[in-house]
Image (cartoon, rainbow, N blue to C red; front, side, top):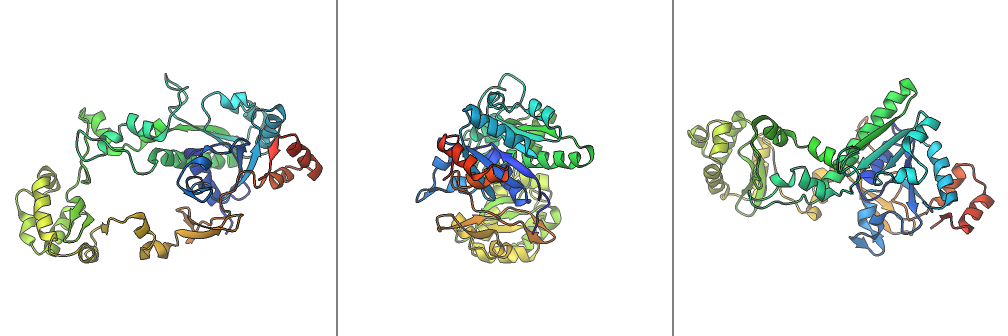
Length: 397
């Protein structure tokens, strides 16, 4: 399948997770992604665990569909080559600290003056203005400063980080959305744009009702463990052999749920008749529900509750996730092969077009594995490429 971004060339100068996740999504949509990496080890995540032999699975999980060129960012010839590549691209994605792009001869405004249709996307830690604009930021710092950690944990005195780099991930998604929007606008105006977001802005943008609660009432929310902060019963409950997640979203489902449990009178208990009542009396309700849930296994309850149309599911470990029949039906895991012949199963992108999932078009590249082919695509001859390699400006794998 040819993706909707086929024909769009993206120069990916990003590293770590937010930028690479953004460009992985663009690759899923059919864009050509040229990942430019430093000669000195490449993307820093190539050195981050977990590893399979010498392969960083951290790196490989977010760099599908890309080609890699290894280049000397700080030599005059390397910067001249980088600028030429930039001006022959449709999109540039970067997440350097503020000022580095100018140091590399890639000031976004100057590039767009030379090529008005260019789209430049930047992801920073804290945004383009303000006292922290020049400061470095990482995912967990954004989780902490955005308030996200203050509502994640078992109680009001313990705060937890997410088990994945959630802010890097959503920043990448927001950046991809901004890029696609800029490309859509360019199709009619002919003008590109400078698109920017930051980890802090992205984290605040997903605060939803928790942030709104403070803005409207002045009351800061606190963690509620594995219970939904607003709806009850909605959270983790213990069956006879282990936990499951049950999400009763309205009063009609509450009545159905009590019938499934074999105790319909519970629905009319004055403590539990409305959603507000159930949340106010959450602890008493949980004790009553778990007394009833102890009669059957988590799988048994899951089947019975799901048949009634009430959202429910087991808590999987990741090894169990990939054995789930629904995950298998979605074909979320795509088998690929590295350039050294080893196999690499990858999670595909989450989108489908006309009922066809986006493809994994290329296995995550080894550092510089596409250096020669990328330079050839810019019109350089084989002798010219050999000379750049001999001079240490670029390096093939």
